[in-house]
Length: 145
View 1 (cartoon, rainbow, N blue to C red):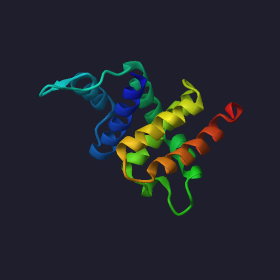
View 2: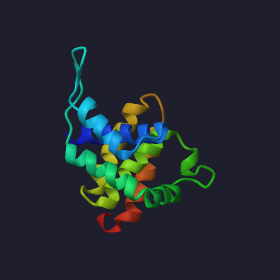
View 3: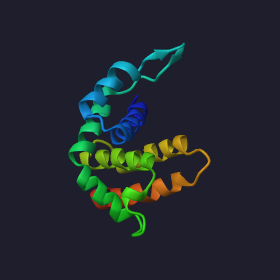
């Protein structure tokens, strides 16, 4: 359920950026119409609602700090504003968990690398995600390494 919460959080952050919707409307939409919903016999995964909400709240409340951490992990020619919006949402969700200190950094890195595989099954993005989040983790929680 925690993995599903992370997936939904990335999707919600992506949708917030693309649509301009508020965090409250996105949270309501996901909690009422997506998480655990059934559509034409397809059932959406259940998720840890508390973790989902915590990731969203932290990503929004600390977005400037998280984006700055991400920028420092990226090469100079590719600031966060230039990267794929799905990756941006993924980095914001991972950064929220890193600054929130709810899970060990290695767990966070593994979970978001798995999500990168899901979003980009044919690409090299998962290696990129691993490197960037590892850098962010070492900056945020050096004691864990």
